Amino acid sequence: MSSTDMLGLTDKVAIVWGGGFGMGERTSIRLAEAGAHVAVVDLVPERAESVAAELAAGGAKSVAITADVCSPESVDAALAEAEAALGAVDVMATVIGLGVWGQILDQSMEQWEEAHRINLTSFWNPARAVARSLIRNGKPGAIACVSSVSGLTAAPNHAGYGAAKAGMINLIRTMANEWGPHGIRVNAAMPGVCDTPRLKMGEEGLAKMREKLPMGRPGQPDEIAKGLVFLLSDLASYVSGHNLHVDGGWTSTFLMQSGFGAVEGDSP
Ligand SMILES: NC(=O)c1ccc[n+]([C@@H]2O[C@H](COP(=O)([O-])OP(=O)(O)OC[C@H]3O[C@@H](n4cnc5c(N)ncnc54)[C@H](O)[C@@H]3O)[C@@H](O)[C@H]2O)c1
Image 1 (cartoon, rainbow, N blue to C red):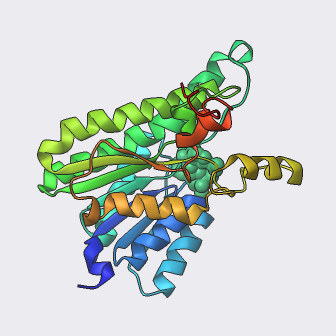
Image 2 (tube, rainbow, N blue to C red):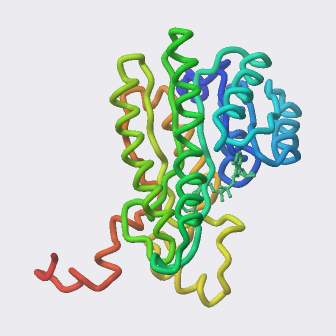
């Protein structure tokens, strides 16, 4: 058996929400490399089109779709368009999120709600639409999203983001529980620091950060994509409700990095 067949994604229909950029772009590419037919959905039409064209040039069946994942109507229309072009969906990933910055006492209600809309509703909407399709078609399937270490630890200056990502880590467990009887698995890949354009740090900040990271470097978008593809593949056929740490060991060593437990016999 080839390694591609082992993934069980050959000729499967995949939909990647936020698939036109960064980790989402890499997820679209990796799924196509694994033999899936991929619907690339993005709010920005040119992003979806350019990634879908790249997949098609590589020989994959793909379609570019413009949609807003925060709108249920837009999500339903996008899923219908994807299924008309490629067939009934088997697997999906949502790769969308954004930090809304500011201290809790300085934030407005609008900022709080926006953080939840773009980081939690953005997964809730497409996950429900895809689960409904899978159940209607009597197909097993897999659903994955991108959480964050900010959903596990305190998230100073971006409380809404952290609370929404913590909500996402809980939501995958409930979805896994409610949809498991239909053969639907639901998981998250959790980056620590990832080298995307959003990581706006000077050289000094980057050097300090590298010192703190166990592997001495941030993750690459492709490494998060590989985590997502694993979760969507047959290799993870009995993995559900799991938040996979794709953080280079960062969260495992946080207490050590803070100085606690650095002395033998002094571990908390
Ligand atoms: N970069 C990091 O260090 C880091 C760390 C932890 C977690 N994350 C998470 O990684 C994920 C991906 O981040 P990223 O920086 O690769 O991409 P991103 O979230 O900035 O954007 C991905 C794509 O989604 C599209 N998009 C945005 N809003 C949309 C909407 N409403 N409807 C449809 N498409 C929309 C964008 O146009 C873009 O092409 C996010 O969930 C983020 O929270 C990132």
